[in-house]
Length: 340
Image (cartoon, rainbow, N blue to C red):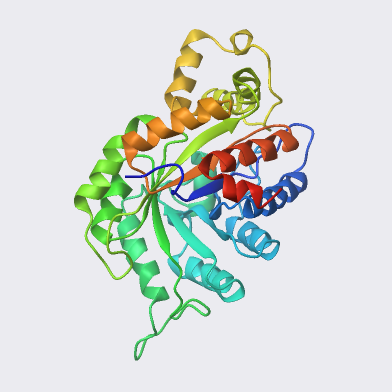
């Protein structure tokens, strides 16, 4: 059974661009966060591919992974994820082969099948809207082929990439990739930070369909959660309103940077919007050290997750670093003390 004291804990960072700041500011804060959580004992630091979103600076995900890996020494750095249908598989093999060559045994390749953006940007990326994700299994196999050793008469090689061991994860916010990860014998990461209602069914499907492979002998499921910790429940709830407003803006189709926290969300949204945001963020864990620990224990008891990945979109960078330190202390005092 998973328990807080022995489970690995990791970070999902979207390189959020806060109001009054630039993408450059966001990316420098991403590196600052990665350096801090490395000292705190976090296992991975993943970045996500999103496009056409002024509040997210990690669109060129492979480039940002290289920036973060180059500024750290031991934490694993990867994608959570690369939206494979936006790219030729050989290009992703070359990009991550390059990253693995530069930072050996530290690179993860998490893959999603959604476009990571809206319809106009999808068209700009793919030049067509005919791809609906159904081609994802075929693209996955093509990508895995390019990471294998070159065979005789192979006309196209990934250089670098061929013969390198870059762990591939499948990401999901529903059941499609849960099943595919299971039958493919790959590690699985679920996006409970914006799709909480599908968490338990997707984890059950993954474990039920899992088939051992050369990559993995038994199922390994990581779950991404919004976790915001502070000295008190009230402070944490206040800090969480920046993230809440960002989800509200998505629902309103109002693109923009991440706003500062507010004292009262009821002055901003109506009841319908409140319910819609709750459906996306209802699995979030927000509170003091004691509250977060209790809710994490309950979550682990429900999900039996093998690893937790933490996402925290906090406007004040010092408060954001503090949140991740509190979470590290919850997962294990030894890890937190090493950074003191």
